[in-house]
Image (tube, rainbow, N blue to C red; front, side, top):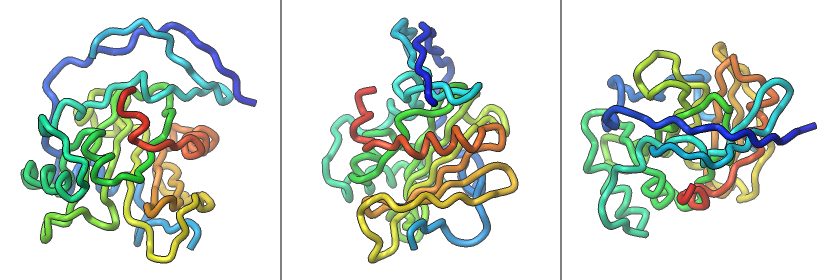
Length: 232
């Protein structure tokens, strides 16, 4: 049974410059927690003193994404278009070699209007990185992996293995219904991946082996529209 406690925890203030380019030729999230073969098709920084809500699952916990830092939210155009294709083109113009292009929440929510994101993440997570992922030949979003998010316990890209989780989002196959499908677990060597489809998109949530299956499943159960999290 889930318990909720509300200790007052001071959020970390993040120092250092924002990393705008992806690490490595294949991008910072490519291959992390990924099974071999195709995507899963399931069904086919100011200091704050506001209370942090931690949902306990056994000896572990989840914390709301409003209490973590989205490191890419300061990048992007001054004026945000509500046209997905215009936004995709704007982000693509920032591409500097990797097909993983750092993008803010606003840019990703505009480019993929139905995209959802977990409302809570493991309590050790302090940073989230976010990218739109492109087909370099066309400058359009890669249909297999269109967006990627990293859940970090250390300052992003400073330590190998500093992520507790990775979320990849791609396009659902034609004919798949809009309702959320069953969640399909896939055991991978370094942890657990959960796959499902919803609202025209398909999701793969990877949790490192240090995250229990119960916590990983609780994260997948709590997805909400990314657009609802823009003010958090």
